[in-house]
Length: 76
Image (tube, rainbow, N blue to C red; front, side):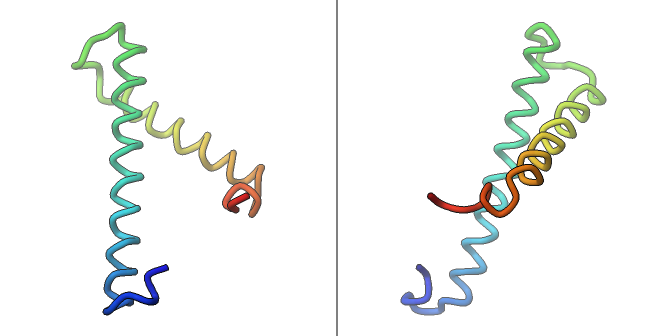
């Protein structure tokens, strides 16, 4: 998609970085929300609990990708 734009190598690299930042911040937000829910609504829940939920999100994502294989990444 970006091959037709000027400086396609730079714009492609920038697009990849922005997508990675989006996924990291989305995962962090999801961890904060599930941590807040499981802590009974407290915003200052223990840090190990938030780390646990972040790791569990990663495990679930990896299991879905492993179970789905290349089809999990494909567009239908």
